[in-house]
Amino acid sequence: MSIKSLSRLFQALALPNVGYYDGNLYRFERKEGKLSFISAKDSFAPKLIIVNRKYYKEAIKTLPFDDKRQFDKLLDLEKAEDSSLSALLINRRSGSTHYVEWRISTCVPNSFFIVPETILLTQLAEPRQVIKINGDQPVFAFACDEGVYSSKQSALISNEARFLQSIGYQFQGDIKVIEEEKLAYSLFQGAMKLPLLKWKAFFKGLKSDTGINLSVKLLLPMSIAFIVYLLLSSLFLQWQNTDLRSKIEAYQSEVSEALALQSEVDTLEQRYRGMISLSGELSEHNQFWLVLVDILPKTNLTNIRVGKTGRYVLRGNASKSTEILTLLLEHSMVAEAQFDYPTRKSRDREIFVISFTLKQGGE
Image: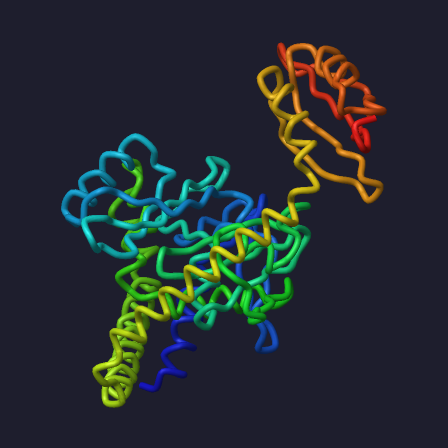
């Protein structure tokens, strides 16, 4: 059976059991040779759910040991306390363990596998290539030796160059844009490229009230195609990787270690220049941070943005919103502070939207 035929078999058996969640649950549909999302019925219970970036937290972490058994034990303890946790081991070296951690929102429906979309989409990237996922709020993603970084577009992270600068990398002009209408197909491609052993990190297990017979009946068709396809594709990719490495090693010489060291120096220099550049671009907001420090102890901010006119808009909640406005009105650096909308009560807190400008030149 060819890889193409196996891919078709996998789609036919697996897609009816795969969903996508972005606040609503969708299922995959193939129509006229194209993959797309359609709204799922209430009875739809997918065995694998791919989650939109808005509905999980992602972080790269390091542990001060390189023993995999210790890592597995620690991960099992954390998962016992928080079932939303998924973690993927990236590498173990020099007495440290590096891994990526995802915490899935509790609003995501239960499923046997829950997979963040960024781990799948970064499988499509070339080395040092940024992935940009277009939509209502675009997302940037980047895979590197440390793991997977991603961030939603914002006033500060406004483009791919700033995104890379914020994580210590220099943008080299290489970007892959995934348009909204091609997201379903791109996720399917990424799922096919994700190595088989990495899927274990996203397995959530069976619920105690799920019968064994029902589980086998629902999972068996998808599992057979899924495992066989991933196994063969992983072996094929591994063979390609081994073949490529052997060709590269044939051209290597005694200078390889020196070249590797030079590459590391270049990377560190790029990170340094990137951070210096980002610091310079953000210096215009230094006065704003000084204002923010004075009000943070008394409020919980949920959104900060800068308008086209240079007016700062704060959205958040406090026990007394008028107290926050008073602090801003009395601040020596603030001008024209005001409520943009009437405040709203939420339990014992007041939800507010306040905007203000900064005085220029120490006025």
